[in-house]
Image (tube, rainbow, N blue to C red; front, top):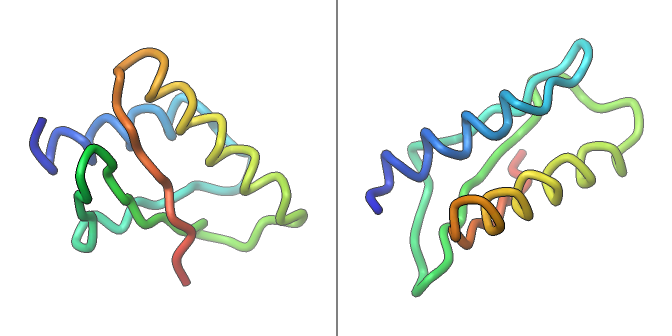
Length: 79
């Protein structure tokens, strides 16, 4: 799978988890692969009221990508 395909899948799965008044943005210009894992930096377009909600969303998307796409992705919170 190419970097572009991984980015598109991550964006699709993030879009399937709408968050009121917020969106998680993929920083696709710094995505990298290390062995079987893809490291995909992300950031919210607005600060989350509760930080744990942000991390819960990232974890849920990572788990879905692994279960449904057999894709090992780590969504890395970036500044």
